[in-house]
Image 1: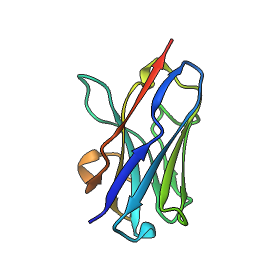
Image 2 (image 1 turned 90 degrees about the horizontal axis):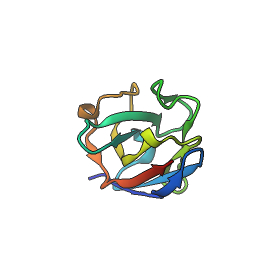
Image 3 (image 1 turned 90 degrees about the vertical axis):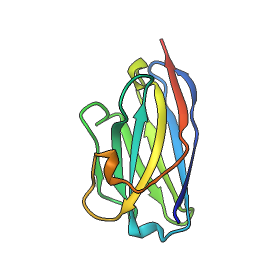
Image 4 (image 1 turned 60 degrees about the vertical axis):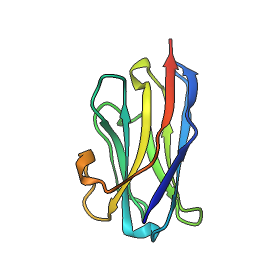
Amino acid sequence: QVQLVESGGGVVQTGDSLRLSCTVSGGTFSNYAFGWFRQAPGKEREFVGAIIGSGGKTSYPPSTKGRFTSSTDSAKNTVYLQMNSLKTEDTGVYYCAARPSGPLRSSPELYDYWGQGTQVTVSS
């Protein structure tokens, strides 16, 4: 059973940066693809980025492309989401999710394992 634990959330101001971490246990890291999602109050869960566990290939939606970067450290079984130039609309609970490695997907329904989430609040 794969377990994911996010950390690194907090309260920042517009234009600031923040790095989220997702520590993975219970599975072979390189066998999975990892997605990042966020959910604001009253809104659906939104895809913000994905990366192959073996590293390299990534995918981002237009809303985060150029500002968010995901990376992996296989030695630490950790996935990172570096968030730069944060905006108030980036506020939400951020989740890390995992699915068997393959094409990077943006639909949350296609991910099998989820972390508990970490709150990111961007104030103006």
